[in-house]
Image 1 (cartoon, rainbow, N blue to C red):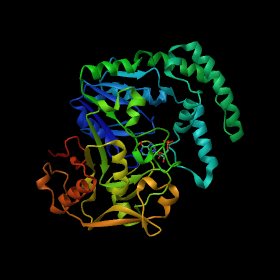
Image 2 (cartoon, rainbow, N blue to C red):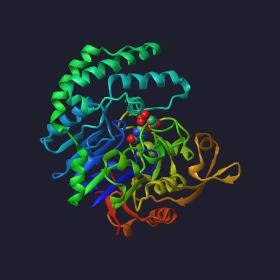
Image 3 (cartoon, rainbow, N blue to C red):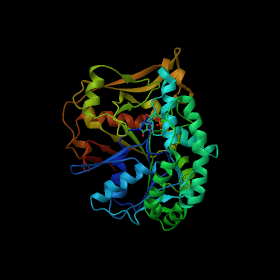
Image 4 (cartoon, protein in one colour):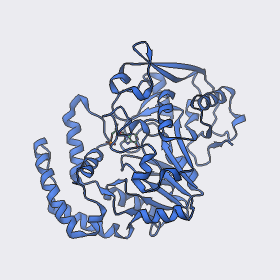
Length: 423
Ligand code: IMP
């Protein structure tokens, strides 16, 4: 069985928890795109694991975690994550695989991300400053350096010196401190020794796992509204987020996927800049932000908050071919007198589909709302749909009817068990 989990909004939908839930029966968990701009938090008891690179289902005993070729990797961050897990007595030897095709996020990529953002001034994109855009840019312009080179050390030294010298010239133009090439090479030598045991041809591992009909969980990162092609570009991340990214990012064929779980948060959040039609300000936004702990896992930034935008979700679930919805953080809406969802956009008095909107239209259009009476009960202990307040049931049923996709799982709290599983 192959399960794909994909974020259906602007990221931070609560994918980590769903991955962990499906991971219980998984043999292999795969990251296939993005980098450490993503952040998935898994809560076990009182312990929180904020993963950025390691597939979050790895905490389940029999799971092998694969960082497949589509992921760009900051090796220092990866080592910190390995240490965090191993400190708790979970050995990752033979449990974690990194593709030799993964590109490395280098110090100059991070410096360039920062320099571009600062130069944009008031037009900042609000990137995570993890070097994502510059690393993907180097990848497609044949200037990237992969784990393959890290294995073949002499090639690494040659390529790193060449790239770093050029990047240092660009950094100088930005007035930013250049990378110390000699010092960096000493660091990378150590990194190489540490990570060598994990580096493999992940395609072979995954091909065999698919052939053996293993349970595979594909951990999507970010959200489809950030997809480099289908977002309101340039308010995007550097990779494709739609299901086609599974094929390019891991080699697993898209038609082998059995289920695509679209993770939808019961409201909306966004980090970074860019238009957000249903954005909320003031008391309701503050209340939701605080109750939902809506501060970035990666950057700690307070997230922007909005009502659930079903027009956008209809677009993104179409792009991913989702056949199941996971509705997360529904408990956070408890106590609101009124809950709204956006069911369409009006632009210049006419209907406009989300797919036709660039950032200019998104900034100007008017969302069409449907309003629901709220519910006051705490629902975090509820485990059966019928036990939810009637208004809350109505909200869920409206979402599945609108999207024409069943809501298969409802998350009502941060704990591992706080779920309502529907048939
Ligand atoms: P970058 O991916 O760091 O280049 O940032 C580009 C945009 O994508 C920024 O608005 C980020 O805040 C956003 N972004 C990237 N990854 C995630 C994610 O996993 N969750 C939420 N926002 C993200």
